Image (tube, rainbow, N blue to C red; front, side, top):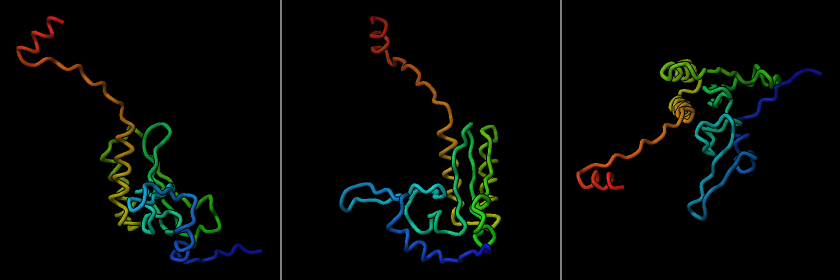
Length: 158
């Protein structure tokens, strides 16, 4: 038995999974209804063909590391790695100690400048920025200071 890679059009895959996918999440009521996607390689979480990580041959995903930082996940070509699911994804980890500029520049180099998916460059950097922002420690809000003569006098009485 030989390892034969079956080539299926991404348009056909989208037609099949567009309405039937376990990753679909619908929110809202009536005309306000919006459809999202929980796919791991979907940068914007929009349920669309452009952002779908299952359908596109080359997809990009950005996720948080366990120890702080960001991981860039890219999907390799189905022609070479279609019969090897374990090596279908390429991951690049950026530590939490690496500067934000260097992290974003590395993501841009990987996604756009190497002609991988230049249309997803801005979304990948925005996702990495949101993850890095969420990993910052929360600062305590300082106590408000009384301003003005009346406020200071009322604060001294209390």
